[in-house]
Length: 262
Image (tube, rainbow, N blue to C red; front, side):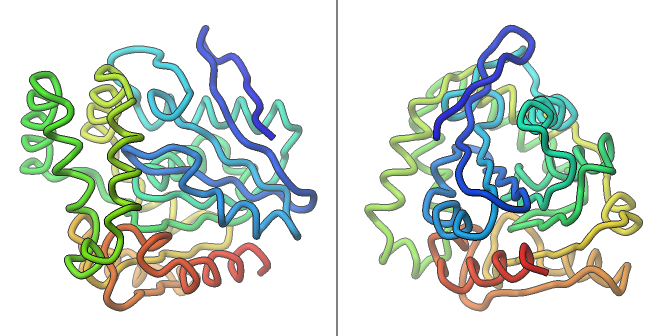
């Protein structure tokens, strides 16, 4: 079911399906809640599933020229409080993982479990921040050129050959996002803080799902993060890149479903 709330004068759109313990699905950059459609449908047989369009993406509006992870988390919390959710498992893909960590920092009592799906607790390096500024300039000049190049690069090389239709569908979706929304989210990611301690010290279940061939998130980084605490479970899925829900959909779903159950 499509639902909306108002947050700072704009609509935040989300899907709500199923009954049971709440599971919250947060998409990544250049994505929208539809990325979770198959997973949400399957999970809804046992869980209440809430998939949210983050600010500036999908059908949700923009609240400024920089969407910080804290701003996203506040919008997510508004949805959850509207739905009377007092405890939930949160699955965050890429940027959605950064938002999940910000939510865990601001609303720790909400979090029963947190899964980083192709995501990290670390902030951008200085080189990455410079690259974000370069990308902002590219989006301002020609969004389509950027989107058409950025999305295929998220997949392992062999996946690009097998998932042409899926990749093109993602490109078409992202090209519909406003320049403002894309740039606001780039700025938010660039300026995000280190939340490693939030994951390490959090009193909730923890999972990291990582692609062996991920070109966005470093394998060395996720291994370092997982090694910080015995209660951080790390699953490295072989032979995939940054888009496990498309590159290894069954395997990644089973990891997520098992995490939600336990």
